[in-house]
Image 1 (cartoon, rainbow, N blue to C red):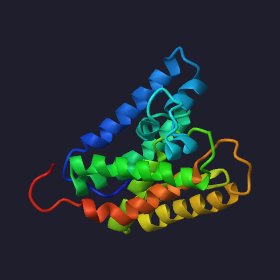
Image 2 (image 1 turned 90 degrees about the horizontal axis):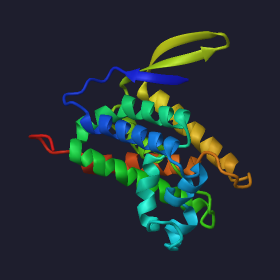
Image 3 (image 1 turned 30 degrees about the vertical axis):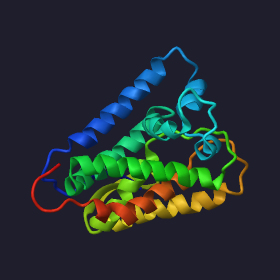
Length: 223
C-alpha cells in the first residue's frame, strides 16, 4: 500500500510544509557533500537516547538541541523521500487547519515527543536517531483525527499488477499505525543494532492525535 496524494483541498498556500521539505532536502545534500564521516555526523547531531535523557555533554552541541537537529537529518535519499512524501500528502491540510505558526510548533512538538518516546523504550542506547518520521507521524495522527473520511489515492500492489484506489484516510493511516505497532513489538525482542525507530513513530502519532485540537486556530486570519 503506497499513498501518493489526497483529495482534500486547502485554502492557504502551504509554505511551511514546502519549507520543511526544502530544509530537510538541503540538510541531506550537506550531509552527502560534507567532508566529515557520515557516522560521525549522525552521532554528533542525532538524538542519542542516553544523552537526551541524562544530558551528558558528549556531543558537540547540547543533547537537548539534538532532538531538533535530528529531525532534519536523514540516512539517505529513500529515507528522505518517504518522509517528505507523507509530509507533502498530509502536512498541507494540517497547516491549513492550524495556521502557519501553530503548524511549525505542532510539528516540532511531535518530533520532540517522538524522540523521547523512542529514548524511553531503550534509555541506555547510544545509537543515534535521525529523521523527520517522528514529526511526520504526528501529522498523520492529526490527519486521522481531523479528516478520517478524506480520500487518499493509493497504489495497491497485487503481484505483478498495480491498482490505484481511493481509500478513506482512516483506512490508509490506520493500516500504517498497525504496521508500526506490530514492528515495534517485534523490535523489542531483537538486540539493538540500529534500524527503524518504531516507537518514535508511535509516540509522534499519539501526541499528534491527542494534541492537534489544542492548536486549531480560532476564526479570523491566518498566522
